[in-house]
Every structure is written in C-alpha cells, then in structure tokens.
Image 1 (spheres, rainbow, N blue to C red):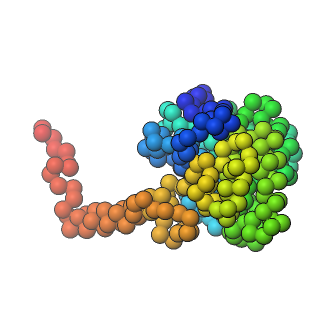
Image 2 (cartoon, helix red, strand yellow; image 1 turned 180 degrees about the vertical axis):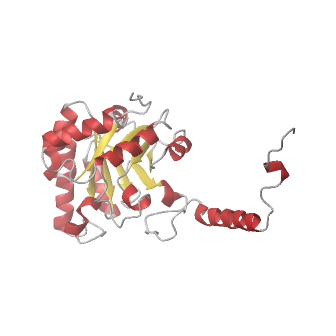
Image 3 (cartoon, rainbow, N blue to C red; image 1 turned 90 degrees about the horizontal axis):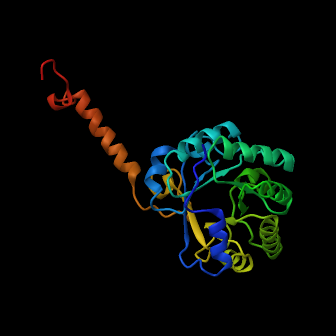
Length: 274
C-alpha cells in the first residue's frame, strides 16, 4: 500500500507559485530503509536515485540499473518514511521509447514501489512523456543540465550550459518541462548564473546539485554528505561528516579484538543458568 506523504508535490508547486516558498527545499538521495528513517524527520524529499548503480552496485554509471531494482529500493525507502515526499528515478530506457511505455513504468514505481512521484531526465525531447504521466495523476520531477543517463552523448560528466547556445537550450528545456506539467525541476552541474536565471524564469521549484545557491532547494546523495566514499569528491559536494574513516576505525578495532580473543567477552556471551 502506498502511504501518502505529508509533504506533497502539489504543495511544493503551490508554495513557489504563491511566493510562499520562504524556506528552501531540503532533498537527499538515499537507497534503503535505515537511511530513510534517519532522514525522514529532517528533509522535505527523499529521492531514490538510479545513482544506486554507482553508489550501491559499484558500476561506473547508471545505465545498467533496471526498473525492478528501482522498485525494490523504493519499497525499502518507503518503509522508513512517515512525512517526507518520496520520489524515484525512472531508469534508462523506461521512458524514452514512448509516452505510453513511460506511463506504464511510472505506474509500477508508484503502485509497486510506493513512490509519490517519479523523476525523468531531459527537456523538450521527453516532454510528451512527462505530459502523459502527469495526465494520469502521477507527479513528475524534471531533471536538466548534466543528465547522467546521457553521459555518452554529453561526453562524460561535464558542466553544462557554458555557452550562450547551451544556456538558451537549457532555458527552453526548463520551460518545456514546466509546461508539460512537472511539479519541480532538478538542475545539475550548470553555472550558478544559469541556475538563478532558470529559477527566476520558471514557476515551479528548482532543486540544485552543482547549480549554485539561487535554486529553490538543494539535493545531495547521503553517502556523499556523510563522507562515506573517499573516491568521489566533486567540487559541489560538501561533506558534513567523515563517517568512512569512523567506520574503518571501528572495523579495525573489532578485527583486533576478535583476533586477540577480547571479543566476545563474558558480557556479550550466553551461559546456561545465568
């Protein structure tokens, strides 16, 4: 059963359009129950990103992630949520073939996964799919700028919108996504000035990741935020803890105590008659 969120796509959009979005939206990407439970009281939106292909599965990109895997991880996150809005990425080739197929797959993510909304990468080229999905009553979060599913076409993970032509194209994409019915828009890896220009131009909230301080909200991956992956340190990520080192220290201590027979001690053992 899909649990309703207390923080809704309708409300996010209404706040921007009424000029009442005085507090910026806090969004975090996570992939499991425990992190969702820890995040839920503090954030407006939890995104189950197809970045799990890299963060959880260890791949070099997101392209191999399947719809079934996204449903599974969304189910896990949904169990940890009481208040946050739950959005999920539609993985590669689940919405690009046709609007009808996009709607069918979006429906599975909501009905089976427990998502409150779905996220699609792209602008004008996927506006028909956004329109089809939203017309069926499923909220859509847009995503333009650096779109990881298009990494081969973009030539890798590079900043987008640096030229005047690219800037105008992204503004057109933002308006197309809004006009198609999206309730909000992720802006990834674009110049801060362009992030501000798009935020000022559209009437839906913008959520930035490497898009400067002027967006209506910000999103980071929980593992990046907590400093769990020392191999991945893009300039737009701020680490608020260094838990990777803390975990390694704890495991090293555990290993030492096991090898030296200090663990388990009497207090961590069971005895007949005690």
